[in-house]
Image (cartoon, rainbow, N blue to C red):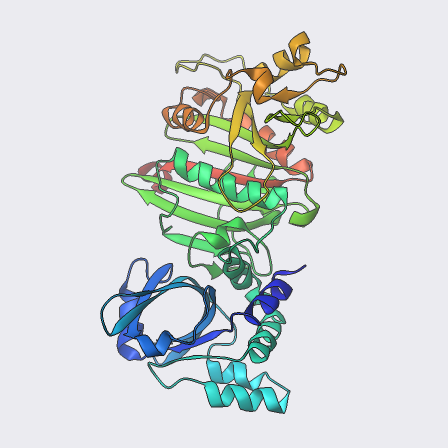
Length: 431
């Protein structure tokens, strides 16, 4: 079921809200740092009385001499005084067309057009729509492919409604892992997010973005081997912290719903290390009703992936220290059931190979399996892994930069979504 169909059903129970900002509110919003990610509106109780939350809202905001329309999610309303309530709105994402009147012009059904015309708010006003009109507007907006990212973002904030494929979720988790390894909070606002028009990217959920048909044209020559995936890049986000910059790229070789796995390639130019994570899903062990264990059964796909995880030979001298120069790690995650936190463990490729060869990894029927119980705590936790990446204690040596091309090319060959997090010194990048 598509995002548009899910949202259309949702707004028939909790109808859309229309909001039109006046010049003063629009200017304040544009001058705010986090306004397009999280804003609040205070009005008399009666204004919000008929609103059912959470639901979607269409906002028309003044932008100089023109206007722009945004889709967002109104998440809650709270009484803040005897007379007033506060409405919380999250993640404003640009829509096409640019005004509520232009959206009205797209309606061909005369009755629906009349109903919307009657409900269009005055400048500074807020109105809510009928269930049928709300669903009709969602269908119209979904007819424009440029609005897909806004619909996906809005859907992500509706409780228990959003269901993502393993690869889509893992791409979003990989983005959060890259930010955490760089020392950035998960709710931080990037300095820039650029998405490829018509593409789907987990970066669409982390900040206001622009569309650009070729998001990596100027970057392809700056990173060895990066041209191997440049045609498939779907988005780029840039974070800046003191004298360092983190650039996260998302890319896909096939539609996300057809992908079987997602890799995170973390390139820390500050420390000179490369680390690659590959995601695997843990299944709940239901054979024993008393068991609370989660397990993964190795298959031919895993063996094929391990066979590709090889670094080129290196004959030069190595001056920097590493606990291990092997950059390959596996992240095993409990299969997602609902939209909540996910427990996981990580093991290195070397450790995984040892596990696969160990007799204790075999289950009751002789099959090899990985599980919490079998590992008995001998694995890396998320915080452990992020600290090792950030400090440069694991991954390739600085002198092994040539291996980067091989890693990226191998990741691009398999039908995978790839997240490339590129951390670099700003001064070095400017040279």
